[in-house]
Image (cartoon, rainbow, N blue to C red; front, side):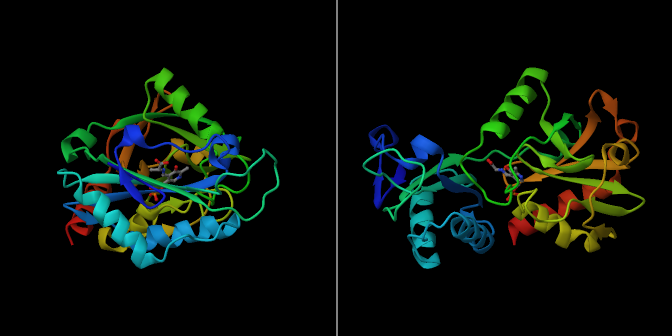
Length: 277
Ligand code: PDD
């Protein structure tokens, strides 16, 4: 079952107009929200970020937070899986003709739920590989836009290179991953790029930041370079679907001699606790 514009219907029965601006222009925004043991994780934060994205592109939020919760909970109940990821997208809607500028339209709302199979600690402890590339995206990466051409090209490169993620840099500063936020650990300080137009402010990133103290780590929201990564004690990526993943090989070179710093284990445990709260 999926949700489309007020109706819960079978996925193969869901269709939209060819005039939908999401289809024609990628004119829309989205969220990916995890559900753990049937409970929607950090819904308030995701709905706030959705609101920010909608405001940035001048789409009026079609629903109140209460209504969003109702719809998401109902969709969630159609599945027997206790852990899921909810994908929701809102496009500007369908016009009568294709034109770049827009009038006020009725937004199209689409939501689907997919099983979420988080990696176990021992699967994560193996460590993952990444490559680096120049960040060629636009300067409003804070908007969770469905226009993801650059990101999908990076994801395809990751697939071709058989690596987990592509880590991006702009003017010699690491911004984020193609589909994740990035942290480095150096001398018990966690560094991550500050929020602003060059990164998506990840909900998982915020949880890592708020857990730093519990893992006896200092935190600095300051940019770092590729060189800093090469000398780091740890490199992690974070996202709602991947949680917190240690990267041990970057562009074929080991980080911290390929060893995972104990602070990652602390952060992992802390995150699992938050999921169970
Ligand atoms: N992506 N940065 C980018 C570019 C992302 O696409 C994502 C997540 C994040 C992490 O955000 P969060 O912690 O809120 O998931 C950062 C989702 C999972 C996706 O596009 O499927």
